[in-house]
Image (cartoon, rainbow, N blue to C red; front, side, top):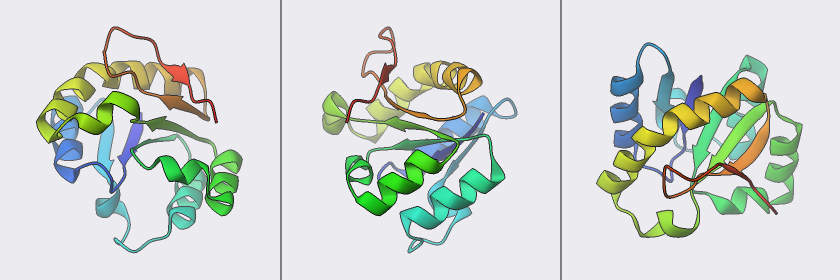
Length: 132
């Protein structure tokens, strides 16, 4: 799995997860792959061209902006959203919980080359398709 972590989640989490799961998974922060001012549509389209990517984001608005939604719908990228209880967690708690969820995300990416899922706050819960 190749996992890109967007700007709304600390790049330090991407570094920590990469260190823990390398070489099995490539986990990087958006800022390491694209300039900070890159519009969402551009990095979505580029990841789609490269293929086999997943994205972890807290940006729930990306689903409602028509041009970004269109790019997401057309892409072969699996999107994982941190919503609900994740909003209250700090960087350390988010990282700790994500460590347990990376294998679930990787399993989902193996099953499908696209889709949107809400990551459960509790690692024992199942991934849920994201309902718009």
